[in-house]
Length: 343
Ligand SMILES: Cc1cc2nc3c(=O)[nH]c(=O)nc-3n(C[C@H](O)[C@H](O)[C@H](O)COP(=O)(O)O)c2cc1C
Image (cartoon, rainbow, N blue to C red):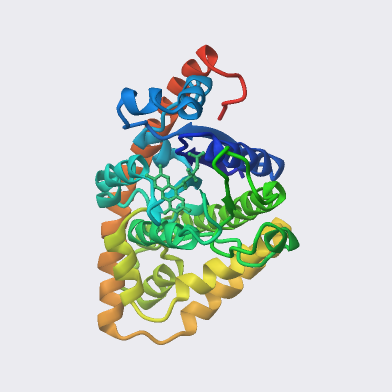
């Protein structure tokens, strides 16, 4: 399995969220992810930036950080956002970027991204939680999987105890008031861990799907009709969304989450030997075969499966190529920029 690809995306005027993003990058890398740091395009007029020495200095010192592009979202398995609290919400340039993701959202390309958020504010109760919840509201629309830190580590308490994501208070001189570095790293490592489970589960489901296609082909070559219960029930047990909202809804509509059981058990087996995983897979397949299904549900699943297969066959290679192209472009860009920005 390849490493999780994680994008750390931040907006910062005076450097606080840039620092949080750098710590997140370090934490995610220590957890084995391939990490790239991006900044959000600044939208403020130059006159406003020039009028604030700290803002001006920060903009100049981070000139070499790549501005995030939509393809960077598409290619990432996981994303950590860091954005200042402004009037109890995310800063406007960040929101503008979110508003540009409608096309990706429409194509279902943001679903199943594992995401997590961090913020800063000038006051201890200046709206940090509202900012993160507002960010996560958009993430729910994406169909992303929010990996909040909760209280999963003592460092969260030490950093002020925000379970939605690390938040830090920063005074007028730009000095952080709490020591949040370790909490940020924990949040990043947890995000990588959850993203690993999700990406492995999706890959295994895809492998199961390919195996199912082979079974179908074998059955057809042996003269069995496609509509036989054996095939249908196996298909239902192996369906998982792979980038199609439409498909996800259809799969859910098929009935109880046989696909989920399959995925859960495989995910639990992620750290086990291949032999153990195969045994589990066989067991799950065996279970799904014994579960009764109405003829209507079987037909729906069959239709859904055929549509998905067609769509997936048409889309997945294209997506991979786009990411490979992006990867090459990024590498070329990196050679001109900073050596640590690599994946
Ligand atoms: C327009 C504006 C609105 C702000 N609103 C809030 C706020 O609602 N609550 C708060 O505590 N701080 C607020 N702040 C302070 C910022 O949160 C603070 O400057 C920021 O967290 C610093 O992050 P940065 O160094 O990454 O830019 C605001 C700052 C600006 C410029």
